[in-house]
Image (cartoon, chains in turn orange, red):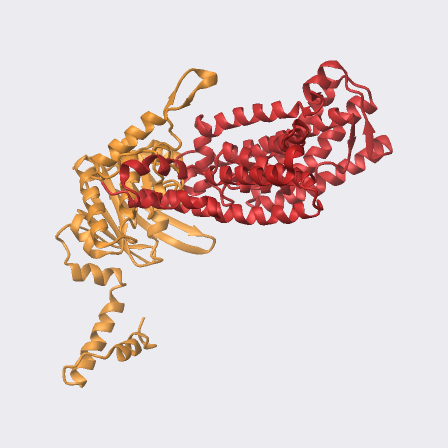
Length: 283
Length: 347
C-alpha cells in the first residue's frame, strides 16, 4: 500500500484535567473515504480539529506524507492540503458565491496601487466548480450564499477545497441538517472527490450514509478508538452497536426481549419503552 | 412604507424581467436610498425654499460631511462585526492635541496635525489590540477607551494650559486645506468626505482587503480557517475609525480656531445611527459604503431640515428615533428579499 497522506500516532488531547482523546492512532489514505463514527461527545470534533490545525495534540505525533508535522494553525494544515468543511459549509451567508469561494485567496488584476479583486474571474470559476459538482441551477456568481440550499453550500465548500488543491478533505457532519435527496447529493459529491484521489474524512453519526460511501471506518467511544476496520468487515448492526456504546443498545434489546417473553410476544408501548430506557440500571 | 410596494413583487416575477429589479434589491443600499429620498422630499415640501436654497443645502451637507468622515470607517468596522464608541474622545483628544502643540506651544502646524493624527491612530491600535487579545466585546472596550481618553484629555489640558478651551491661529495652507468655507457656506470637509468615501469604497468593494472585511464579519471562525489574519484586519479597522475621528478633530479645530475638551461626544451614537440607517448589519458581514453615505445624508437632512419647517427643533430627535427603527426594519426586509430571490429562481 502507498504511504498514508496523514497519520496519527498515539495522539492524546486533554483540556485542563479532562481527557478528550486518548491514544488515537489512525491512517488516512488517498482515494479512500474514512468514516469517523461515534456518539455525541465521543471526541470526533476534537479529533478533526487536531487534523485541521485548530488544536495541537497534548501528546503523540502526526505525519503528513511520511514526514512528521506539527500544525500550529489552520493555515499550517491547509498548506499541507488539508481542508475542512463544516456542517453548514463554513461559508458566509451574506457574501456572493464568487466572493466567498475565494476568501483568503482572492484573484487580483491590475497594477499595484490599483490592484483589485477580479470579480468576473472569481464568479466564473466558482460557478464552473459548482457546476462540475452537479449544481447546474447556479449560473450567477453574484448571488448570495445564504440563498443556497444546505447541499449546495456543501458543494460550494467542497468545490472550493478541490479547486485549491486539497488532498485531504474533512467533512464535519455534512448530511446532518439535510433532507434525504440533498444528503444523497452530498454523498455523491464525496464519491466524486474520492475518484479524484482525494482522501475524505467523513464525520457522521448516520450509519447508513457511512456504509454507503465508506471504505474505512473508525469508531470513537469516550475519546478512545474502539474499532478500526475496512468495508465489509462488520455488519450494519455491529457498527450501530459500537456507536451507541455497544452494551447500552444490547441492554435495551435484552430488556425488550424480556418484556416480550413476559407479555406474550407484545412489544412494549411507547410509554413503557420510555420507562425501560430510563431505567436506572440502564445507560 | 408605501414607497416599498413597487419592489415587493419582484421575487415572484418571471426570470427575465425581474432580473434587474432583483439585482437592485440585492444591494444593501437600496433601503438607504429610499430613506434619503423620502426625507429629502419630506423636508423639501415642509421646509420650502429656505431648505432648498444653497444655505439650506450647506447646513445639512456640512453636518453630513463631518459625520460622514467618521461614519464611513465606523461602518467598515461594523461590517467586520465590531463597534467603536471611542470616536468621541478620539476627536476631542486630537483636537486638543493640535491646539496645545500648535496653539499653546506655537509649534508648526504640521507637527500639531501629525501629533493629533498619531494620537488617534495609537488609540485605534490600542482598541484593536485590546479587543483581539482579550475577546472582550468591542462595545465594552471602546466604551472604556472613550471614558479613559476623555479623562486624560481633560486632565492634561488643565495641567498644561489651565483651561479646557485652547485657541489656535492656523496659517495659510492649513486653513484652506482643512477649515475654510467655500462660497462662504460649504466646509472643505465636504471634499474630505468625498475623498474618504472614494478611498474606503475602493477598499471595501474592489480591493482584496474588502473581501476579508466581509469574511471576518460574516463568520470569524471560517475566515480564520481560510488563513485570514482576523487580528490584523480588526486592528487595521479600529485604526481606520480612529483616523477618521482624528481627522474631523483637526478639521474642527482649524475651522473654529479653537479646541474644546467636550467636543465630539455626539459623534459616538450619531455615527452608529448613520451606519445603521445606511443598511449595515449590526452583527456584521453586510453593508456598503454608498449605503453609509446615504445613511449619513438622511441623518443630516433630518437633523438640519427640522429648522426649516418652522416646527420646534425638539422634534428632530424623535424623528431620528422613528427613522432608525424604520430603517432597520426596512433593511431587514430588503436583506430577506435579497436572500429569497436567490432560492426562488429555478433553472
